Image (cartoon, helix red, strand yellow):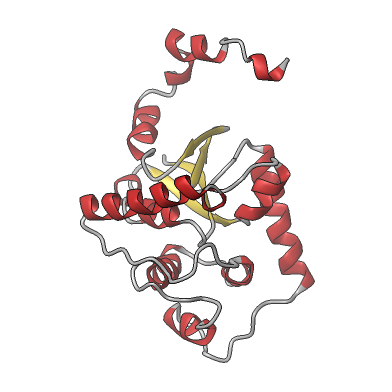
Length: 207
């Protein structure tokens, strides 16, 4: 029987796109459940900065994505503005309970085609199978659910996207898939001495 795991994502993240392009190897082993969250909300809760707020890190992140996409053989084209506001898209995907086929279309629009979800809202909606006249969600219930998803993700230890949560363990990043496979092969992985030892390291910043 396959384990169920949450897949936390925000369309703002190119790493989420690169993870989606590699997820096929997990399909037979995990029941991945897409969970839209709002990455800026997580960063605010944790008093953290995103890569785009540190110029050198921003450049490194974009260059890494170009390299990683080339390595994977997948198309990659940055939108002309980044970061962009992802709240409307995240609410829309939540409202329509977006499955992976819809997510693939949504992320391809932004990260394979370089589409602008703000200026090209109608085009984006058509790309994911909705009408071009689909309005940006303003329902209070949808807004509240996105906030709830984000808060619950933070409580589970999520600090960025993409993150896969399995058995109260989190696996962050587009390069975590091999680690997930290893954990599925060996559920006792994190009880090994080398893992326990690093958790016992003293943190002078926390004193």
